[in-house]
Image 1 (tube, rainbow, N blue to C red):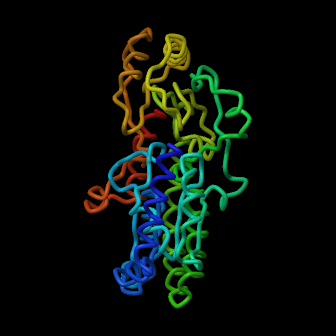
Image 2 (tube, helix red, strand yellow):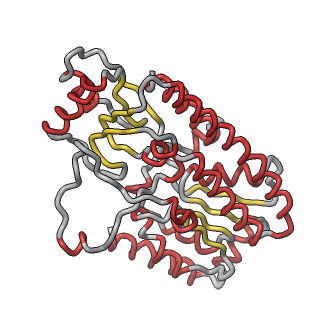
Image 3 (cartoon, rainbow, N blue to C red):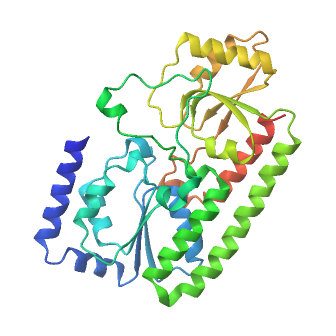
Length: 327
């Protein structure tokens, strides 16, 4: 992975060097507009809403627009060039974005405003945790273990984090484009109000639920959501896990939890094939639990965006699934 990133950066540097004018060329393409680059869909959609309906003065790019997962994304030379010449660059900032540090060394626009979402959210960011019954990653060597804590990158699955992130993004956009600061402030206020209303809807749904436990036969990227509303969870793997096969012990533990807690549903994320979830159900006493999907918003494509998908619409859909899961 590291060698690939170095190769990409070298190609990007060559592209910049071939034109005294890498940045001039991109500026020509954007016609002097505010040039914003985001890595993932939630950031992209937050920016769209802060820009408002009349966003003719901005050029907005989502790098991960083909459905590739944040955890396996590798930037192209074109991606590095886009970042190098933009006015505002917004990224998550976790281990999956380790390539960004080197990419930022190649910046042509020295006035670029950079937003690291994990850094900007401060104490709201949580470390990944292994809960009872969860299968850990394969053993790593001692050098890797000494690197420090691994933080949960899925901050966008908390509506409260989303509201905080939008304030940070608003400030970055106002710094880069003070001429439209009032517009950005007004739009951010309106959008954050919608986020807060949906947050209240989640709070009401959890309060009305007959159970406050979620059980995932899959990865669990929803820790921020669970913590926001006081939900307990069990899962096969942590949110950033690359594991695809659950051990017998993990399957049996989760199946026994379904029985013990009389759970009616086993959850998966949108990209899950349901095999592990079905195996868990097959090992319960009643074998009647249903499989429900929550969307982690990690696989949204440009085609989805063109079809009208939004952060709010997906989180509203998740709310309806959550209501069913908590019955």
